[in-house]
Amino acid sequence: MQNNHTADQESMRKVNTSLVLNSLRLHAPISRAELANATKLNRSTISNIVNVLIDDGLVLEMDTMESKIGRPGIALSLRPDGGAVIGVEIGVGYISVILTDFVANILWREWVDCTTTSPQIEIITRVHDLIDQAISFASSRQLRLLGIGLGVPGLVNTKSGELLFAPNLGWRDVPLRLMFNQRFHIPIYVENEANLGALGEYYFGVGRDVDHFIYISSGVGLGGGIIINGKLFKGGHGFAGEIGHIQRDPQGEMCGCGRRGCWETQVGPRAVLQRVKHAMESEPDQSTGKPVEEDPEKFTFNQVVDFALKGNQICRSAMEEVGRNLGAGIADLVNIFNPQMVVIGGAFSYGREIILPVIERMVASETLPAVRQDLRIIVSEHGADACVLGAIAVVLDDILREMALV
Ligand SMILES: [Zn+2]
Image (tube, rainbow, N blue to C red):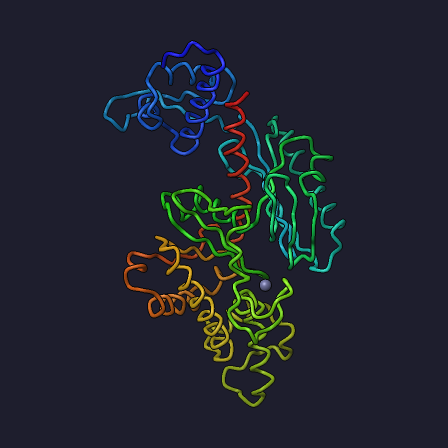
């Protein structure tokens, strides 16, 4: 394109470089001709940009390959050793950290359980230590660290990197980016965990090539990430998707947000355990298939699933009731958004044999036939990793754009 204004030319070059880098990330290995097709840029522009990226150590030329359009060509891809990225999730009762290379291969990972009552300073210190370990690993491989993505279960101002409110952690107004920047002098990205889960599935999981889907993250809380037209729907201030706090029972139990009867109080693993405990207390004589553990307080969610799969009626009924509550809320979301897919992430990847059919039945009976046409309800491919992988995706997406802006 002809343009005599140098600043405009420079800006155009950056935008084009960003297009090329992101196409490489999504479609590599890919030939120059295919890159031109994918980006709608002309061949000479592609060649110029690719040459600069090869010189910068970010792009790799591979041996000749069979081109998708029938001619042999040189395949291009991002260099795995172009850099390293860290993804972190601060969950309720755990911390998960992974380190990946420039093309999102996992190189190192650590998962640490912590008590839900641990003080904030203790958890932050623990996260710092884990990041230090990841950085040491990256250094041992001579990989330069490009950024850290951080997922938290609450409302996040992504511009300032501040966590405004995380009811299930009991945290308010925590300037996370500032706190991490003081220690790690690289770009820090902070996002809501369910939003990252949705991005993790969109880039690396069952949501690849699906432009409209809803990711539901069920753990201690219930979060949602909504992908519309291939983009995360963030709303006016970035807080969209707080589906866990839709009120579904005005007489229900208190929620961590301070209100009563929110959807998240009806549907998580905690709700399953409460129902089992309640049923065992109110029907002490029911001996058929009664859980072998004496004390229902000691059950874990996974144990309840195991009992249910072995035919225990108390455990199965509890799972099914929670599945109906989950399905009823999902049906509302399907009526509103008409998604192509609903992805269930978090705890229910365990016990999916019981939960999924119940959800499917509820959605079939509570939605309009037209809106559920071709709808798929699927359990997350990455389970507990969806959020940290989404954190990696956010960093890579932005870093690739930033590199193009240098
Ligand atoms: Zn609530």
